[in-house]
Length: 149
Image 1 (cartoon, helix red, strand yellow):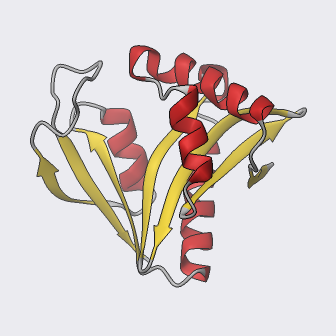
Image 2 (spheres, rainbow, N blue to C red):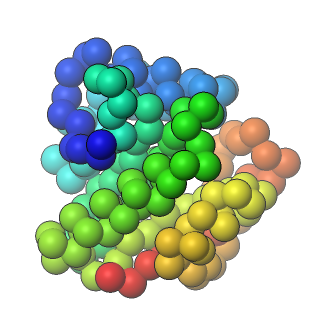
């Protein structure tokens, strides 16, 4: 079940475990996650199974834009539509809050993610050269992808 995840250290630790499982050395730190909770524009939604967070998305809604900061699904739960449901939730909530578009960046070599975003209605709007400081991909470039709401 997807729900908004409110701040608690046990939740932060669960999100950090997801980060490590999904992104390895590129994972957000516990401090990064706590900072997102402290950011008044950030919201975190997660898929919870048997009381445990197994996937999440972090989004910042500012004026007319919803900026998706991160999305991650534990490896054992991938290819079950969870990421799609998380993105649909973000779009629905963003639209209710008056946002006109959702935006995100994704490494140009992360083909599964690019295909997921396209399936969910996002279009490539441009490329940011050397966007990532460090990455598990050979490229540090990112596509900027947009979805009009």
